[in-house]
Image 1 (cartoon, helix red, strand yellow):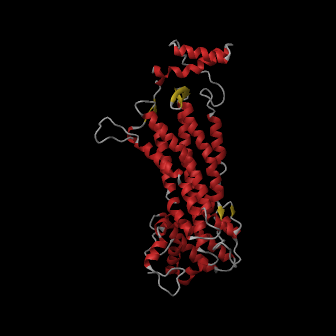
Image 2 (cartoon, helix red, strand yellow):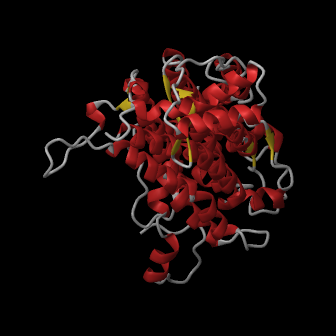
Image 3 (tube, helix red, strand yellow):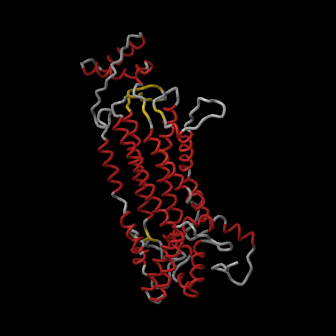
Length: 445
């Protein structure tokens, strides 16, 4: 069994070791290639301040790039007896290069290694979530435009209320995602700051060039105060989780609508049959299981900020092992949210809309407000018009006029989808994805 990086001259209780390592060996696989990227930047900086020779840097960079390629191929493993990804990378370097491999930890602690790994991993996941959110946004806008003239009932208290349209329904969720993107952009800005060089949370007596590693890794800036850099662990995850929960909230509501509107009692939409499942006993059933799972997974993600907060909320400044547990709930959540976004976009693309909903007379009364407004526009006081239409309904004399004349901004006749698209584009412009891509490419070339 390999020695621990911190091991002294005494034995380790195996049960204690298993308990303290927990799921780190499994979860650190999420972070492996980012640990390599952080090490490439760090040793490049170490050579610039004289802590590595140029020839040592050359061989270390070559071997780290080999390890990165192994990570990309999904073949990186953390061996039995090795605590974490940081130890495994250093072990691989030492096996191949001898004592040179032991030099990469100068000026670092595993505390700031995991901080930078989490930041690099999280910003990559935010990037992917942003792209998938934009795909869903585009599908919703497209459907909104396609069905902008198809009317449907709008509800309050789950009672038929006023005329709405599929243009409004699809477009509402598009604008919801545009607002959600503001939270994601804030999460990106907090995430894309460099903690490397904070070491165990109190800096280093080595003359580290933190500006250099910040630029090499494509961060927008650094976490300047080294104590705050360590305090940021948990805080970053909590705030990113809030952004993820905001998107998940939109997905959960949309999924509920879709399940409701797909039911025979509504029959407003028809889901693609490949996205439904059957019953073991009822041959007619086509169940909206995909949307039900999207709803459940999205609701689970909405609990993520509270889970993170309860793990880290009452900790004073400095590092504590409690923070390790955050990885268990945080790292896998990105995959679940990305799956939900992909599935939702696929179903929205294939969803069929019932264009003849209003043929059913049960929806006639939703045009009562239109009649009140028509009478008011022709000079009758609003309260008199309201009373007249109410009495007509009570006496069975109400005859709906099933046409709308909504022209104000954001109404069925003026969706403002161009404005909503502009909101999304404005948000997307606030992400520095190109800068990050270039920085990572330069590190690996």
